[in-house]
Amino acid sequence: MRRLLSTYFPPLPRSVLTLQAGGLANSYGNGFVMPFLFIYLYNVRGIGYAVAGLILATHAVVSIVAGPICGSLIDRFGGKRLLGISLVIMAVGYAGYALVQEPWQGFVVAAVSGIGVGGFWPAQSTLIAGLTPVEQRPSAFAMQRVVMNLGFGLGALTGGFIAVADSPGTFEVLFLIDAVTFLVYLAVMVALVPEPATRHDSAGRSGSYRDVLRHRPFLAVVSLNALFIFAGYSGFDVLPVYAKNEAGLSEMSIGLLFLVNTAVIIFAQLPIAGLSRGRRRMPTLALFGLLWAGAWLLVPVAGAAGGRTAFLLLVVVMAVFAIGMCLHGAVAAPLVADLAQPHVLGRYMALNALSWQIGFALGPALGGAGLALSPTGVWLAASALCVLGAVLALVVEGSLPLGTRRTPAAAPVSA
Image 1 (cartoon, helix red, strand yellow):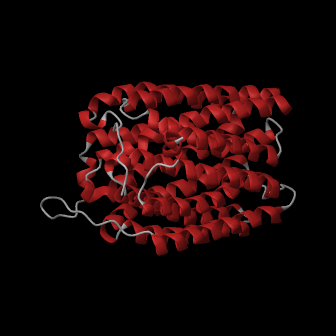
Image 2 (image 1 turned 30 degrees about the horizontal axis):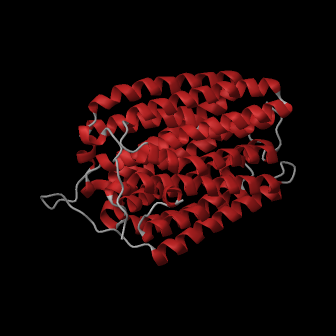
Image 3 (image 1 turned 120 degrees about the vertical axis):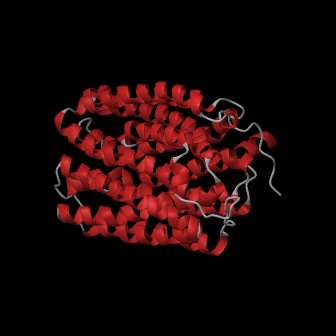
C-alpha cells in the first residue's frame, strides 16, 4: 500500500504540489473549450473548415513568436511573474471567443490567447524545473501531465453536457468559465508559489539564445518533438469535428471520449513514469510513436462505421493514444530539463514550448484543409509521420550525452 501511494502521490516539494493544484483548475477550464472550439467556429458561427483551421493555427503561430521573447523575459524577471502575466492575457483572449461572429474576430482573439500561451508553458515549466530536485523531475512532470489531463477530461465531460450546437449561448458560457479558471490559477500561484533563485553561468553572464542554439542534442530533441506534436497531439483539434460530422457523434459522446483519454492517463501516467526509471529514453519515445500511428489508423475506420461502432472504436483510439501520451510524458519534458543549462533554463523551456506550438500551428491548418479534401487521408498521413518519428527517435539517441540517455533511477524523498 505504501508503494502504491508513493506511485500516485510522489513526495514532491510543497510549492510544486501547489503549482499543480492551480494547474488542475486551469486545465478544467481548458477542457470546457478546446474539444469544442472547432465545432463552435464551424457549426455555430458558420466558419468553413479551412478558415476555422487557420484561426486555430493563428493561435499557435502567435505563440511561436511570443514564446522565445517570453523565454528571455523569464530568465530576466522570473517564471512566476511571467506566468501571472500570461494567465491574465489568456483570460482576456479566451473570454473574447464568446464575442466572435465573423472570421476576422476569431483571428483577433486567437492572436491574443496565443500571446498568453506563448508565455504560459515556458513559465510554468521553468517554475516546475526550478523548484524540483533533478531526481524528482520525472515525477513532477508526470504529475503535471496527470493533473492537466484530469482537469481537461473533467472539463470536456462537463462541456459536453453544456454545449449544444443549436444554442450559441451555451458555448459562450464555456468560454467565460475558462477565463475564470485562469484567474483562479493566478490567485493560487501568486499566494503560495515562490520564485526559484536566478542562476548565472560561471562567468556571471545571464546567457542568451546563442547558448541554446549551439546545443545540438537539444535541438535534435525539440525538432523530433515538433514532429510528434504535429502528427499526434494536433489531431485532437480536428478529431472532435471529424467525429461529429463524419462519424455522427454528439457533443456529449465527444466529451466522453476525452474523459476516457483522461482516465487512462490518470491511472497510467505515474506508474509508467516509475517503470521508465533507469531505462533508455529514446526507445520509449519510439514506442509511443508507434502506438500513436496505430491509433490514428483506426480513426477512418470509425468514420466509415458510424454510430455505436464508431464511438467504441474511438474509445480504443483515445485509450491507446493516452498510453502513448504517458510514455511521452515520462521522457520528453524531463529530458529537456536535464539537457538545459541552468542559467538559461527559461530559454530552453521556451524553445521546447516552441516545438509544441509549431506542431499545433501546422496541425490544425493542414488538418482543417485536409478534412475538406480527404477526411480519410488526414489520419493516414498522421500515422505515417508518427512512424517516421519513431525511427528518428532511435537515430537521435546517439547524439545525446551519456548521462541523459536514461531516466534517473531513483528519486529521494523531499524533506
